[in-house]
Length: 118
Image 1 (cartoon, rainbow, N blue to C red):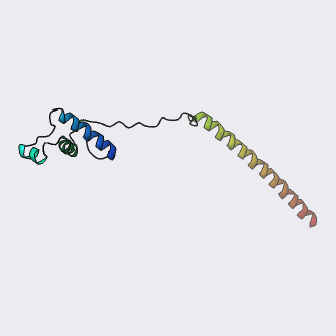
Image 2: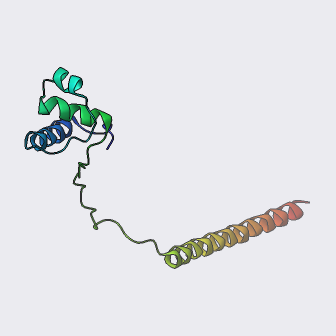
Image 3: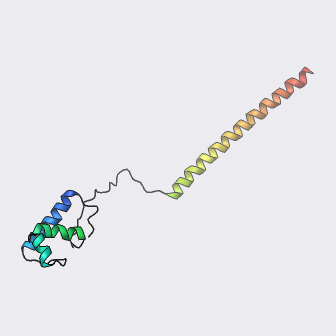
């Protein structure tokens, strides 16, 4: 497992758990020579750190995720949306027809008044 993406607390827990395993005679997951072991002072914590850095530890971290709230989220109903859109379009068409009628009446009145003046 790669070391990126872990918090310092997760890293400490992983290395500590692995060091405990090593101190209880678990097999090492990396090949270390006698000289390297002497450099590390046969310290389980340092060996665990080295295994962590090399990304060979078979330990995973599960992070709890928040529950999805079901309130306030409603499923989109295409038919409902289309019906509402159709209603709005009909209302707009009716408004346009009313405006056209009133404009026609006004233009007729203007024509009558201009023809009566002549």
